[in-house]
Length: 97
Image (tube, rainbow, N blue to C red; front, side, top):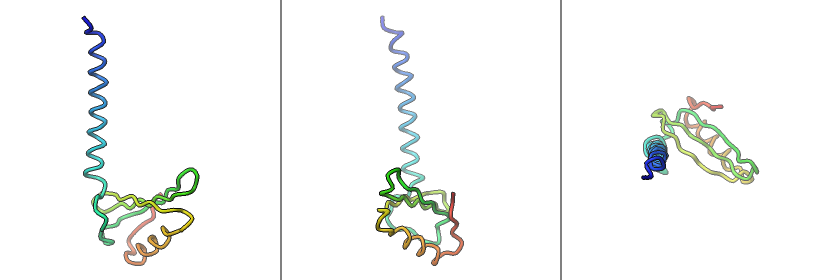
C-alpha cells in the first residue's frame, strides 16, 4: 500500500546508518583516546582558533595517523607552553597548515 513511501525511508535510514558507521570508525580508530602520549610518536601539530577567539584547539597528529585534539582557552595562552615543550623534546615535529 505505502510501498512508494517506505523505499525512500529505508534509503535515508541506510545513508544515516552509513554516516554513523563512518563517524564511529573515525572516533574509535583515528582519534587517540588516552590522556597520555609519547612525544616521540608526534608527527605534526596544528592550531585552530574558534570564531569568537575564546578557545584554541591544538590538533596533534601521530606517526600512526591517529590524532588528539586538545582544547585551551586563548586568553591564558597555555597552548604556547605545550607547543614549546613538544618542539624542545622532539625536533622532528613539524607545524602543519
